[in-house]
Length: 199
Image (cartoon, rainbow, N blue to C red; front, side):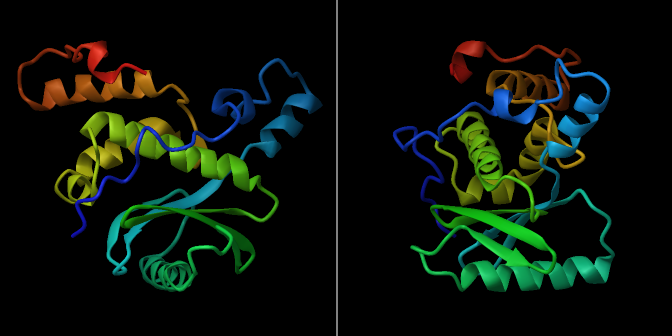
């Protein structure tokens, strides 16, 4: 298992604002609001796989049977792992679109509709990695293997029903810290100091 950090704070930050690009329906009414909601990116599933093809995390937001999940995981993993490093991070699959990004030894994969914006999905993936890095501190693949339940909790705070629900990293970390305090059995939802997760 690779212990290399998944992401470094010195890496280039993606341009644009998640908050501004993900919520176009705010301030709209009637048909404009309905049209704006259709413009939101719907992620069908999120998948984390290692370079060896080991699945580290999967989250399904669209209905798939157990056999379909196994087949989809195998197909998508084979497609992504066969790609060269300099090839495009977007590829068409069935009537959908696969968008992925590699961080150290892990591939972060998302599946969306063909008409969805690829850059927004890449930004969402990077947003997830940033939160993981701030929570674990120099996050690596081993952190996700031994603390997979925390990775799922962070993802659930980040996304709901396949759409981004919380663009604030600080809020996600504060809620996750409060959940950790409850799990430790102290009976209080005292969040850890915000200074630890300074943005």
